Image 1 (cartoon, one colour):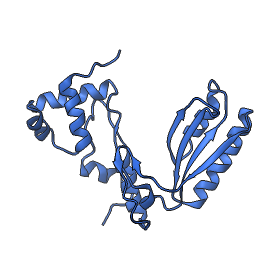
Image 2: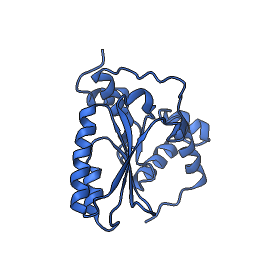
Image 3: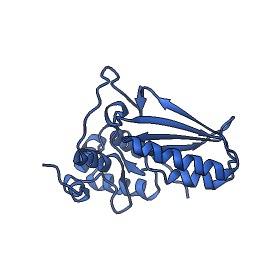
Image 4: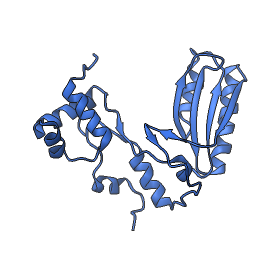
Amino acid sequence: MVHSITPPEQELIRLLLTNSRMRIVAMGEHLGKSRNWVARALERLAKSRVIRAYTAVLNPARVYSERSTILLVKTNPRELRVSEALIRVPGLESLDGISGEYSLLGLFRFRMPAAFERFLDVVDGTVAQSGSNSYALVQVLTTYKAHGFIMDTSSSETAHLTQSEWELLSVLRRQPVSEDRPLPLTQTEIGRFMVQPLS
């Protein structure tokens, strides 16, 4: 069943895009709706999978010190083994089926050289099994805009993140929602996901 998004729900989504950490009461005041309406609307949007997750937008040039790579694969679009294998590769940001000379386009981001080398091993093995034996890698030099946000490209300095800081960013980056949990994680909940607490 397709969820029909009402105009007030559209306004709520726009508000979430601006500030997903806003309290329900503040959202209701901004929209001229009750706190209960906002809570129920968020539950409906999560249940119908309109809202899939909350994310923190990271500047890849500052966080991914090693590389960002685009993978183009020639394969039969009906052959799911290739896409299923690529989905399991750590570092995959997005994977799309496309038309044209290539049929899959993947964006991968890596922090460590060893991760990129493991990625190449997986790609070589996966593409060889598919029978197409054809793929291309394109290294991303600069990201100007991501997730609708313009990136600051004036500084090429990479942030030297500790393991705890990286772990925190990883928790913040993708916060899946459910009908039971339609809002972003609280600070306490984020702390529970951290293996090593920030000091």
